[in-house]
Length: 172
Image (tube, helix red, strand yellow):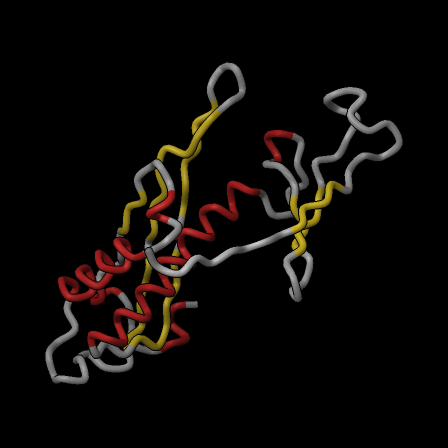
């Protein structure tokens, strides 16, 4: 067995107001997520469940965590493959189904990464192709701790390289 890593967070509900949970509409879903040594993250529920649209929701953060994990593994593996990535943008999206009784679950998440390359060839001189990039994405997906931990499909749908200019600013 490999090393264990632990993570901690303190989640504090800030939305009790004057009457707390005396009714479904009497309280705010706002809360704060505190991680040691980091800025506080303002949280809430999805606006469909009376959340504040200016705050982060657990559903959004799950999609973000999947995207971040995949990106970090991809960059690591791209470097190992000799691919010089100079820009990376992911337009990730997730779908959640809510059932009649109010419970629900994610049905899928799709990651749509776009890359900017520092060179059209690897450090070994081989061309960087969509096939090579797809193989690195597949390896990253196999390694991503978060995607390995969820019980729904996480699909990777990269933007073809020929549609992305090499300049870093072109991804913004």
